[in-house]
Image: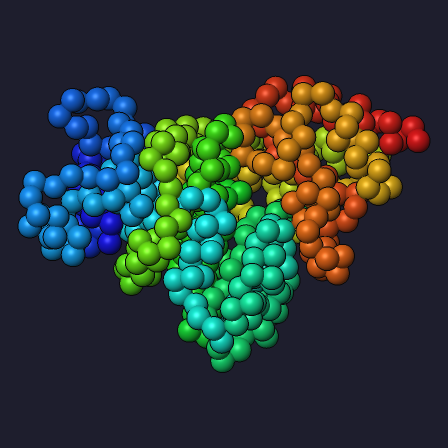
Length: 428
């Protein structure tokens, strides 16, 4: 275990000897946890978290160095696997997910890869959704397949397909919910039950909702992964990822993987993410409200064939999405709690979609999401552009599909920016 996990405590939580987080003395709201948890001032009594920008740590003597290296004594060793700033972020995110353990990594893809490297071997089998981020599909179908790990892709929203795909060697289920970019919703509890019945683990990518809106561990998931690059940061500044779990054995194996293979998170990025978590709940509420307003408006435009947003009552899994929202995040009305990503298909095809994108003036044309700034992209040629046509067809990524990660600008300006291009399609 990373000994840096052991040196931080706060007035809200304390660390147990195995690196997990003990229950708080009282139940604090997630917003309080996001601001107060995971930070204990040094002797300088700084009010904000310090950044420990150091590659290594010195020891009092050779005996202490030996004890630190072999785990007999608590303390930091080397920032590839122990760093106080990284530990602060890990503690805070674990608490927000109501998990016991967290391991931060260099990116969201490093987090997913790290779990597979830790838990699977040649001859093992994964069941996952065909509705995944394009790079995740490539990771399973092109990279890990070379090492003898087989993957079966199924319909995210059909638990029966997950059950039918189970093999004797199935070890892991993996899903995104909401999915990227179609915003499909998985019944996490139902799929967790299927996984556990087959003695497999369920890993959930929670990047779209974050713990502010959804806590997969409470719904039956064994592992939660994050691209901290997105909403956890919130301003598009840094790249990072994280794995959260309640399984001590998984955590300990992840630390061994981290120590030996090195996909570590930098202290500066960890500090950035810790500060991002402090405003996460408020940002996600506003992202959700803006996305809901945009989705309702898009439904009324004659250039739009359909809209994918789980906050709409027309979404086929609206009730499931509402059921799986984090109840501690606050009282949501119809406009809140469904995330900030909206996708929609325009009439026509790729050229019409590109015309809409190119007509925007304030929206940022980029494939990243989770920023305060609204971003827009064409999934078929960006996030899913490296997939084969059959893979895109299975994932229902059409040439007319546009994804908007709705930011925190005034919603009227976001709508007006999209309206220009959509009106051109209508006139054509």
